[in-house]
Length: 319
Length: 294
Image 1 (cartoon, chains in turn brown, red):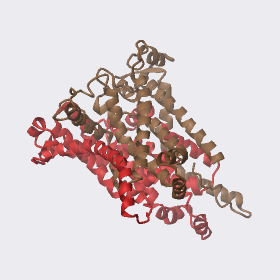
Image 2 (image 1 turned 90 degrees about the vertical axis):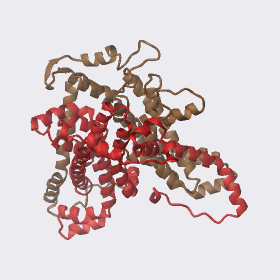
Image 3 (image 1 turned 120 degrees about the horizontal axis):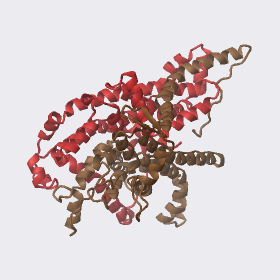
Image 4 (image 1 turned 180 degrees about the vertical axis):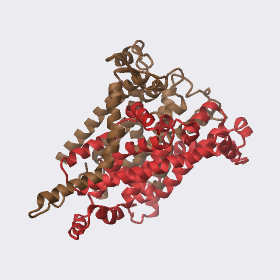
């Protein structure tokens, strides 16, 4: 995966006892990797296969298969479960639609803010302080982020900082996370706040990698700051931007803790997403149905990763 | 972050050039100040609230208390007693420490195998392991719970240790293997010629040279496990063993508007990650960059 030389078979042994040495190495390699392989096989691969099988069944409360029902869980999910996908009204709603909202808004906002802060901070002396301020939320539990932002969004302007600010400007206080029309944006922004630091650090490191001389040369030739950003920095950032985008997209399909703590999917299911729905259905004793939701989650992530690996490979060939 | 930025030394500027520079940079400063406010106010607001007396929180705003300070530690003692947060804090540690050390050890062993011992299909197996990084926990949740019940570890910490270890391994193996292959080949060859076994090379050569990578992955895994809600929520069936994340979520649903408890609880949850982060942020940022630029 790294662009540095991948060592082939290490130090191919010379001489007559080549095959036995190789065999001995093979046994040793097995000893080194087998704990990891065993754990991954038993605790990830095997459960994945079983979840896929469960998704075609009904399970009882002891998580035993009671009946095989073919694709019924999936048809129920996409056609009957209005809290998952509701195409009857416009705009469409449901957990899947909310995830799409998240993918678009969360990904683009985190990326844009991260890029903006990386570019702006590079021009001032307090760059490291600025970056530390934006980065710290990365270390905080999503559970704590939920509490922090719930407090910001509190409807009482005496408590909530946001309503204190908007009422100061003359607006009425709003229950940001208590209304179906604002709850998703409130949640998305809280998560953007927590994730922008990641985009910023990666993009800032990439910016530092761009030769100072090139930029100075452009400046002497009369290029303004916008030209420098648009014509020099941005094109050279395309790879790290792609990397960050993939990370954010995968992250957004898995988003659970923040929503679960802040709204639990409410009010009235307005902020449900796939990951929360899955756990809720599991909690309702719907083992098979929740397995089908998990499979849908995985199927949404796979194309993003395939795209990433492909792009990465082509990048290595041309670069 | 300081370690990550190499500040480029600028030639001395004349006073007029500096004033001009300042004026052209004013929009930049303003933008950054707005951003800093947005990033600081939420955390600072809750931090200040956590030290205010319960009655005050309801009657006046947290920013007004900055000019009329009246602070107390009562909220913290209250949440420790009422919310069982003291035992939850200990539980979080009991969950997190083994769930960090175990994957660190197993991933380092595997990464050595993947980087310095030749065996058939090595790169294919490595790719499959790395691909497991994307698997959502939900995909393994139901069968894992069944498995832990069959093994009789669903009522203790065993299940969550194993689950965190497995889900942390792909990233760990990826990060450590990418670091191990950059170690000088001559060094490892020389040790081999001297008759050192792989285990000896691993312990005496590779591990001592890889402290930054091991630290980076260790911090990641520590923060990940400490901050996790989902796995603890599912895999810890015994109410006495719940970690802080789950307890704070319970606190939140029981005492929704009791901000004196919630704010103190949230800050107790944040203390350990923030200490780890500030003490070791250099490794954290390095690990992040190594892990993302793949």
